[in-house]
Image 1 (cartoon, rainbow, N blue to C red):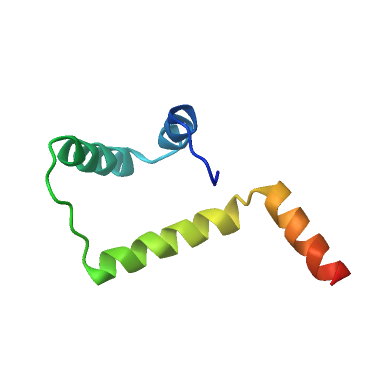
Image 2 (tube, rainbow, N blue to C red; image 1 turned 135 degrees about the vertical axis):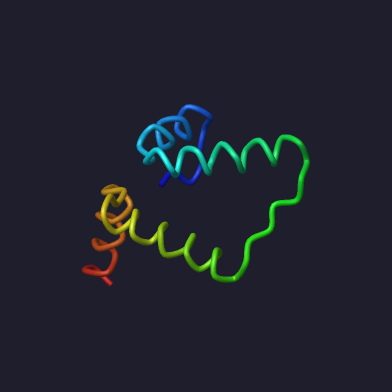
Length: 75
């Protein structure tokens, strides 16, 4: 995941979501644009963290991880 997301990079990520994820994302985006408060339960936050970790694990940013492991090897 990019540290500095651009609108283009966000659209690229959106295109890789499943149908239900896209629908939920659009629902949340519409609520955000209308200025509604979007609250998450602690379980929802936990799931968000789990999904992010799964995604990073399954599709890591190779440049980041290559540099990270190189530092560990040399340190």
